[in-house]
Image (cartoon, rainbow, N blue to C red; front, top):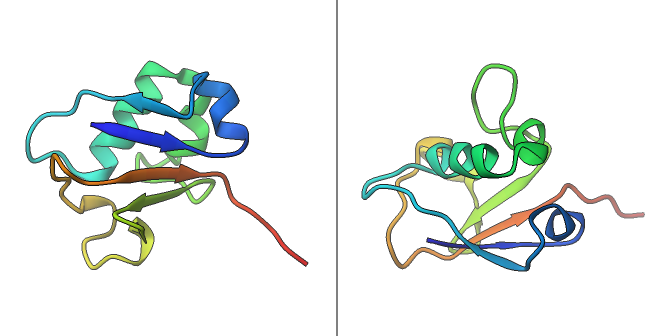
Length: 92
């Protein structure tokens, strides 16, 4: 599955887009855990201390923030899903 990273997260993974292997029927949290295993420097940003999706990143599936989807981090991924990962931002 292709995952696109933005801003400071690109420097950690070394690319704008990466491929991550997740099994069919994987959930958003499964993808986050797979990324954290491959890039341990992202683990604390992706996974919180309870094993759930951290609030330190915004994980979007098909342009929608996982946090606001009905199933949240348990949202199932599809092979054609567009995945984007953003660091938190602030404006003013």
